[in-house]
Structure formats: structure tokens, C-alpha cells
Image 1 (cartoon, rainbow, N blue to C red):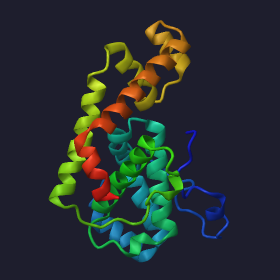
Image 2 (image 1 turned 120 degrees about the horizontal axis):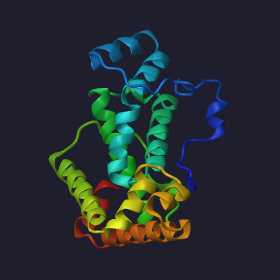
Image 3 (image 1 turned 30 degrees about the horizontal axis):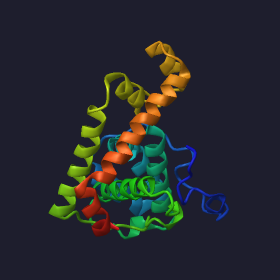
Length: 219
């Protein structure tokens, strides 16, 4: 990813408090999640965070992709969330379920990222990545749904080849050469299709009345 998200810096590793996510297995676990996680945190916060990462990393990345339409960016957002969750000991503040908190935090961060994409003159470091409220209001839930539907609508309205190139690059994470071979066009043509899709997405979101109302409310 060309633009780093805040929080993924060397100073975190130098704190002498090694992240529990450095070598964590990303294979999801399935059990009585909340009970198992609470028990793990009670014994060892580090083990609890590692277990939380294994349980939710993949599903949270899939959730973030629905908003940012980039596998790489989604993975960065989720990884930074977990690092902040550990470094700032946010796990001590969670009164709702861990799942509910993490999903809301991911949406919060994707909104901040989208806002920065719409106005790159506002430094990414100035975005609010602090802990979020642990409950979701009906208005927020509706706004999340509206944003997701708006993004999906813009993508679906793209010309077929443009849409396919965009999804292959941004969602599936394929390289330009791979896409070019599959679509039987040049890599330069693929770049043009993806750029066109991104422009349509940014323009559509900027022109959206609900996003104009949404950003001041959330941020």
C-alpha cells in the first residue's frame, strides 16, 4: 500500500511489549467466542489478543473490503486496529462483546479512510483513529448501510470490463500483468480501467447527499 496508516511504526516494536499479532496464525477459530475470549484475557491479555486476532482477522478484512474495495487497504486497516487494541490496552475498556466493538471500530476506520480519499489535502494522520463508542445507534447503522449500498451501486454501474478490472485489482489483489493476461489487454489499459473506476467512485461519493451529511456527524 502506498499510503501508510497511522500506528504501524517502529516505535511500537521498540516499547519492549511485543505485539501478540506478529506471528499469529490467521486461521479463524470457532467456539463459544465471547466466553472463550473472556477466559483467555483473564489469564493472559497477550494470549487473549492473539486468540481475538485469529478469530476475527479474516472476517474483519472481508467486512472492510465492502467499504474500501481494496484487499490491501482493508488488511492494513484491520492490522492497525488490532495493534492499537493491544498497544493502548483497549481490551480493558470493552464492555460490549469484542465482536461488536471490533466491527464498529473497523467501520469507523474505513469511514476515516474514505474521508481522506475524498480530501487528500487533509493529512491522514489527522484522522480520528481513537477508540469508538461501543454501541451502534439506529442512525449509524442506517448510515453504514447507505454507504455500503452507494459504493456497491457505483461499482455495479461501471462498464463490465472496467468493473471486472477494478474488482480483480482492488478486491482480489491481482497484479496488473495478471489482469491484463486474463482480460487479454495491455497492462497499461488495465491501469486506465482501474483509474477510471476509482475516479467514478470518488466522484459518486462526493456527489452523494448522504455522505455530505454523514461525515460531519461521525467525525
